[in-house]
Amino acid sequence: MKEKLQKYARLLIEVGLNIQKGQNLMISAPIECAEFARMCASAAYDVGCREVIMNWKDDLSDRLKYLKAADDVFDTYPEWRKEMLTEHAKGGGALLNIYATDPENMAGVDHDRLVRSERSAGLALEEYRQLQMSNTVPWCVASVPIPSWAAKVFPDAEPDDAIDLLWDAIFNAVRVTDDTDAVEEWRNHIDQLTIRKDRLNELNLKSLNYKNSLGTDLVVELPEGHIWAAGSESTKSGQVFVANIPTEEIFTAPKRDGVNGVIVSSMPFVKDGNIIENFKMTLKDGKIVDVQADKGVEVLRNAIAVDEGASYLGEVALVPYDSPISNTKILFYNTLFDENASCHFAFGQAYPSSIKGGENMSKGELDRRGINDSITHEDFMVGTEDLSIIGITQDGKQIPIFVDGNFAF
Ligand code: ZN
Ligand code: ZN
Image (tube, rainbow, N blue to C red; front, side, top):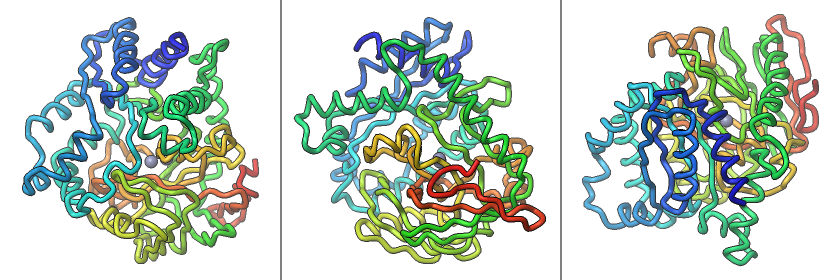
């Protein structure tokens, strides 16, 4: 087990972030994952990292804050914390986010506090978010089991067994095994994603038409000059990194005002420690104008109302139904894994790199090109085994992109 953990830590540092000599690294991690976070720190120093800064997280302390802190706390964001994050990113520091949380950590918490807090953090961290979203610094999101999360994924298992089962599922998803070189496996995987990504870029589609038996029936226009991305990305200074481990998606941005129809979710969506199930959105000229859900509808309505851009889509991502994480049939209640098992969209901000030259465009220019802006960005899943996606070319030809949940090419 220790060897596998070290392989995984090296994978995150050497492929995920590709840490350079003299570069700083900030690791955000739950306190339950301290041992693994230290392994990552050690792997980073081994390749010449200048300094590792730890940013510890704790679900239970967070929950206590939302239940018991003074009410005005949720309308402000500490200046020192903003400075800590922003200065690190401005200095070119890499970001490793070990993301693991109890999917129901905030059940019963006042929604208003969650929304106000997201808004104040969003405003305070504007610069930090832009540095990350525009790939000015390398960043990587990965996960490690914690007891509360493992119990939700494997409710019938004993607590220790649930942790082991979740570790197995994660190792499988991130291609870490006893007898293979994970770094090599990842290079091959990224090459495979690149082939399909290149094909989609050659097609230069005008729009995508989605349909399945759950009720999704949607037209998604793509902006002029859009770029499909997958696998690895590159910072402005040329440092190649992988923003999500695992990653199975090929994604771009939709045209902000060019999405029309109905989207029906195919998996639960976890937002701020609350679970939203079986939801349906209606979009008109890009805007989400109606939302319904069997569970958590209020949380979802608040999430898309956090600012103007939150009610428009910022990402369209393709993942085959027949793919490694999807085939495990495990519902992870963790977007990092669930989004890589299913075609999905995100509401909120689009990646500027989804359009040619976008990284160097001003906010106004991105807006004119149909690239959405928001303080939020939340992926939610729509893929099913019968999903059909037809691509429409610039001259009106129809090209099958997805047939029965999988790529048609
Ligand atoms: Zn995605
Ligand atoms: Zn996303």
